[in-house]
Length: 203
Length: 203
DNA sequence: TGCTGGAGACGCAATGTTGCAGAAAGTGTT
DNA sequence: AACACTTTCTGCAACATTGCGTCTCCAGCA
Image (tube, rainbow over all chains, first blue to last red; front, side):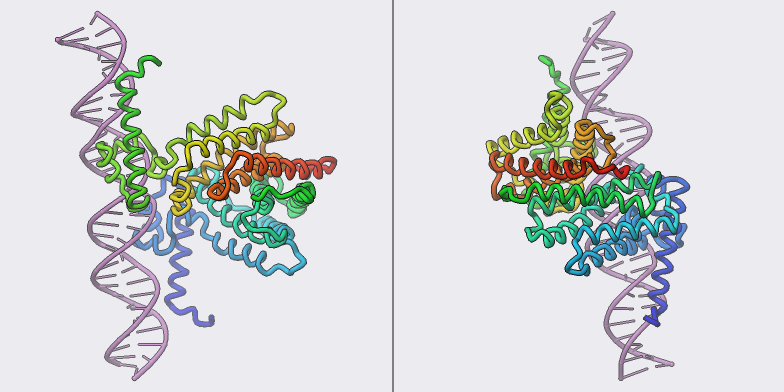
């Protein structure tokens, strides 16, 4: 990796230019009022080239999602056998909040919340988190990934994650996140305990 | 309403023609391989006119969603004070399954599952169900709609709904749906009971 | 150095979507 | 029946997206 090569460097440079230009324009005139042509002009590339870097205008806003998702997946995948998927999720979230607190949160959340197409994109992202989490939770519980329990536990966890995000403006300390996740855990364990002993209905 | 009027009738006729033509074409060549122009030609309208009836190609596949959603919302909104939101949801789902059993299920599920843009649309639809349910659950619990509990309960319920849908091919009897929903209820009550007494973390 | 293969940047055309404006058609009135 | 109003239907143009083909340029190799 000592030799990223001219090509690699240029590619990264172009990508950064696109992100920077796009974000600036989005902030100035809003997401919908910014055209691909505008972004391309600001980043000094041809409009067609934009799509070589991002599959859609929305994707620029989530430019760091792949990285985040890979981090998330790896954390769950590589957790030690005695750590539950939920525990891994909790630890991951706390780190995330800590990092956000350090860097100061970006204005993206507002942009997303006010743009339908970005909301849709965001839902798709959450669905991906949900899928991974469901699989891991299923392992923990020793049931199939499409079993009711696994789906409910994962869905509730993801919902908690979203819930925290919406309250981020008000209170986003790692301590708070930890408290919330503990509450979620309590809820999930209570639910699972109630189910234990009851014959599964099959789903 | 005795006088739908020529206009109303024509409009309904055109809408039906679009749905029928589109569904046929989707079944024949697939969703992506069918163009708006194809649908317009088959329904004998101008391409531009299509968008006066549906906001997108995807929307045709979900042409009965608004009706379904309104039915769902009304059921929850107009439930008697002693019926919980969850109970209303359960009753609604059981009816839905009964109706599906009567009519025989359409091949739409397959189409949706194999087309990303339709999946996204479907997620958006589910998000709308989730929103309504969250509000009503919050009322039941006497908490804010953005509270952690309400969000978790609603999310788990919706997840159960989706879970049932994916198992529909195998087993979709109303009895089965009822059993599943009972299991969900058990889970939710267990979870809420575990939370009761614990100080809310604020979210 | 000069050649060759592959990657990246673009141009073009087709399709989906939408705002705008004018034409066409249904409705209610006189 | 003729008129004024409102709703629909369409064409047009702009913008988002994508497949295909071309051209340029970096990288590895003889």
